Every structure is written in structure tokens, then in C-alpha cells.
Image 1 (cartoon, rainbow, N blue to C red):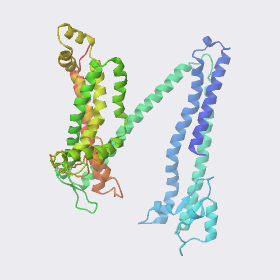
Image 2: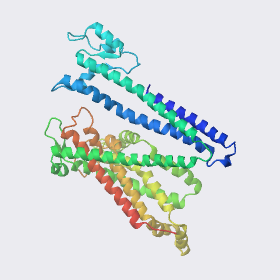
Image 3: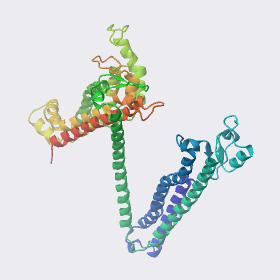
Image 4: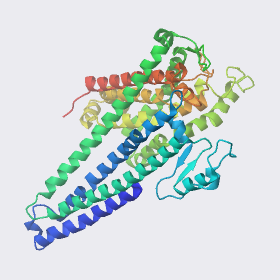
Length: 487
């Protein structure tokens, strides 16, 4: 039985337990809910949690543990058969093992290539295919037996998994129904279960972050064992070559990342801040009701759409204006992919980040400060410049730094709008690239993940992680250090 069907059966048992436990609690109280410690639904949820929680947890653990156990039982046979210089995984690849109960492989799947002299006899192939195993052209008896053993163990494990999970769900539902008595504190039990779920969710988020960081750290250390750290951090040439002789200096990539991010912030910060001031101080509530959601829709547009917009619209427009044959006749821009192209589009993408956060911060300034300034004779614009914005400045600076972190980590706009050239140049109309773009390119294709040219992607990712983490820490420090406390 497939895991999805087992999960559906468990949920059905939980639903039945909910109905039965609720009805039993009401029956025990003789339909007088005031005699119950908790509301009737809590008794139903208790039975549902007892049925679904442990069973689904067992299912998840079983799905993770069964392949490991099966591998530990079959792999020693294959390793003994493979000997030195051969991989057991390649030997198992010659046997296509179908799950128990599934349709045997077709003739085309069993014989993708014409048979050679080393093929097994045709009668043996037909016998094995009827058992759900398709043999390749070079299959030894040990490999065949291992494949059949693998299939038997997997079938037994699947059957035991279904029985154990469904049995545990039934036992949990029965226990929950049995405890549905008027004096049972069902509400407390449900709240404890929900607290456990919330704690588990928080732990999963924390452990996921720790796992990502550890993966970056270990692979970065492995990279620096193969490539000098000084050449990586201070090198001015980026020229990877999987054939050897690579120069992997990060400085051109960092320069392109910071240059594009600077242009994006020069676009996003003024427009976003002015939009926030207008929405918070000048706009009528009817205008604000539709203008702010329209502005925040920019944050919901996929970045690939922004990248296509940069490649097909903004780039050609800039070439027409600043290219050799453009209407300005300056000849600064040779192609549509450039730092300016990616920076302008990325700035448009960052506008809602700056405007939305700044708008919330400006609205948090007490109205009494505005009234006091206006009462002293200041105009509205003077009040905004001299009272509101200084009071909201720490939060606005934090919003700008968070937008900068978002700009540094952007990939698709850079790939499609800025080009792929790693260079140190001050010309904003030259094509450049960033750290994120090179992470994608280094891990794309048939790369040897034990080579410095592939492991350098983890070193780039670790560098980018440290930079964005530092920006976020600075933003939080500024907000907490200079935050105004109002009563």
C-alpha cells in the first residue's frame, strides 16, 4: 500500500474518532454540555489527535528508515560481488526492480538495447520479468538474487508499515474515544498537543537553518583545502575551467553584486520613501485603500518576470538611448545586458519593500507629535521633514538595509539583465555579473562536485550568507538602538 493511501486511511480514522468521541462525551453528559469539563469538540479533537499524530509520525519515520535498512541488508552482497573498482549502485542499475503488486515491465523496458552474447537466457528473463524484475544485458546471478532479495524485503517492509501505522491509528482513536468522559480535561490535552506542534515547527525551522549553514561551512572548508583562500578573497580574475588552471577570484563578483545593488537602492529608496510619505500623510483613506495594495502587488510578481522585462524591454530601451546609434549618440552601451539594466529593474522590484515598511513605521509615529508641531505654527511639509521623518528614521534605515539584503541575494534579474561577464569596471553600461549568478552557473551541467570549480559555489554562497547576515544584524541593531519609545 502506498504511503499516500495509508495517510488517507489514517485521516479517515481520525475523522471517525472525532465524531465518535464527541458523541460519546455528549452521551455521557446526557446532552447537558454544562456537565462536561470542556466543549464537546475538544473531546473529538483529542481522539483525532491520538489517532493521527502518532500514526503519521510513525509513517514519516518508517519512510526514512526503511530504505536505509533495506540497503544495509542487500549492499554487503553487492559489495562482495563488485570487488574493487566497481560500484554496487551501478550493478543494481542493471536490474529494474518494480514495486510489489505493480505491473511487470514491458518488453520495451526489459530490452532497451539489442541482446548481446552476455545476456541471460530468454526463459530466465521471462521468469524474472513475471516477478517484477527486468534484467539488463550483463547481470550476474548474485546481482539477480540481490535484486529479488531487495524486492522481497521492500514488499515485507511496505506490508508491515501499513499494518503498523493503521493499527496505531486505530489504537489511538480507541484510546481517545475511551477517554471521552465528562471529567476528562480534553481542552488541556488539545492545547498541550497544539503547543507540541508549534514547538516542533519552530525546531524544524531552526534545524533547517542550522543544516543549511553546516552544509555551506563543510563544503567551504573542503574548497579551501583545494584552493588557496588568499587567491579566492583577493583575486581579481574569475576564470573557472573544469580542465584545470582555474582562477577563482571573488572580487569581480562582489563588485558586480554591490554595483547593481547600489543602483537598485538609488531607484527604490527615493521612490519607495516618497510613496510611503504620501500614503501615510497626504493620501485620502479611499486613495490609500487601493493605492497601497496596488503598490504591494510588485512584491508578488515572480523575479523571472522582472528578468524577462529587463531583457526584452528595459535593455533595448537603454540601448536606443545610450547606444552607439541611439538618439543621444553617446555610444556608452554596447548591448542590452548591463549593470544599469539589472539595477533599474531590481530597483522597481524593491519599491514595495521600502514603501510598505516605511509606511508602517511612519504610521507608528504618534499623532500627538504632529499636532504639537502644527500647533506651533509649522506647515505640514515642515512637520514631516523635521518631526515625523526624524522620529521614524531608525526604522526607515532598517527597511533600507533589509531591501539591500534582498537586492544582494537576487539571481534571475541579474542572469537575464546584467550578463555573465566578471569584470572590475566603473561603467554602469557594461555587462557584469554577481555572486548569485555564478553560483547557478558553477552548479549547472555535468560538474564534478569534488573539484574546486564546483565547490567554489559553496564558498560563494557562504560569503553571500555572511554579507546578508551582517546587513540584517546592522539593521536590527539600528532599529533597537535608536528606536523611539512612545506612550
